[in-house]
Picture 1 (cartoon, each protein chain N blue to C red):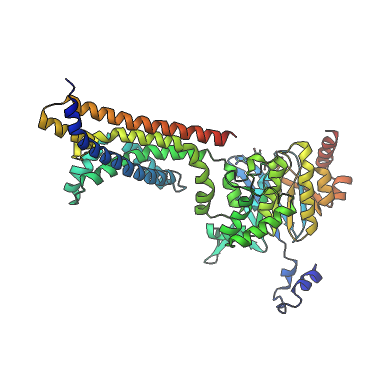
Picture 2: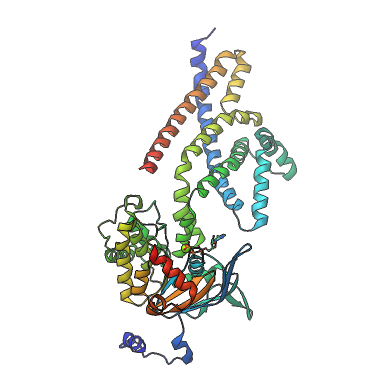
Length: 220
Length: 280
Ligand SMILES: Nc1ncnc2c1ncn2[C@@H]1O[C@H](COP(=O)(O)OP(=O)(O)OP(=O)(O)O)[C@@H](O)[C@H]1O
Ligand SMILES: [Mg+2]
């Protein structure tokens, strides 16, 4: 039933799709990191309309399925605006935007973990708001949340198969294409599962090591 | 006082005659009818207070009487509900806009904060920075000093508080007394004209209090910076303050020289407060 020759035939194609999958994940993660931080800032804004609107946007994005969002970006947005986005960018933006709402929450917990006295010391030394964020708050808020951010990276990686729905040629779609040509489904899909497992497992080991290191550093 | 000022300018430019003679006695700090409420709770009920340049004012009073709140207002950490505060002749929390007094914007506060510094009860050192960086970071970022200038200033200031051998250490590895001395150096290096010390020894183990008070005593002796010392250390207040303020229930109940306050308290509140303090 399991045909090793067939496996070696299709492996190169799947591996190059794996590269694409990892690349999409990383790009989307960077988008999520940046937009997540901006959302976290905006949600803290003293200006009520901004913070309320931000919280509304976060709730809206979280409570609609990712699949619907990427469909919207890829199929509906061009109809509405006349601008069509290539599948890769639609995938990166969709996945990144969706997870930015979760990362904003992670940032929030990190930022709230910084004692109030740190803000006050920064004011007493006449730091500007921007300087306070850059050199006092974020350097203390981010290290403790790095493991959580790492876990979200893994979650995002495992979400990428959704993007085959917008014709982004990641591993799942590649496997599907192979199956539709060879009519052999067992090996391609199994391989995709194994590849996901290997990468996720390695990544989670890395995150665990990072977490231990951070705890050691903070535990003193 | 005047002789000293003129001396300092000797050899430099001829001092311009001051168009406004009243400015000569301009206080460094002036609270005028300052109140503060947190929700329904009125913590300060009308504070009038002046501090002269270089004057050391000790603030004593029972817990919850609003001493910290008063100091935090000067550091712009708490906004007065009513009244005004002036620092060096300029309004702290207000500014003129089209001939009207409006709430100060961030830019105004930023400029005013150059004159004020604060040392906190719980040090509030930056845990992710070495001792040296704790002290050099603000001079570089805020005052725009070069790395060399900032380090020179910082090392000399850390020398003054007796910690120039700990430059590379991190706050977590210092004793409480050492932490507080770093915090003092960090505030001093900005060269404020007035500095608030809010119970800077009350979070310390008793055996570490002395080293911090010693440092403050030395700073006080140098003389040119006005100091607001909020404290429960009565002996210390008596020793270094030019004037002592006794506050209770959000009002200044009595003020005077250390001798007047500690040896001849007039009000009953102060007499009771001191008695309770001594019996402890
Ligand atoms: N941010 C705040 N919100 C609400 N209430 C506050 C706040 N800050 C202070 N208070 C209240 O104001 C009162 C005065 O507080 P403050 O810290 O100024 O007193 P204090 O004289 O410094 O007392 P202590 O000697 O205990 O330090 C207290 O009842 C306190 O609970
Ligand atoms: Mg207090």
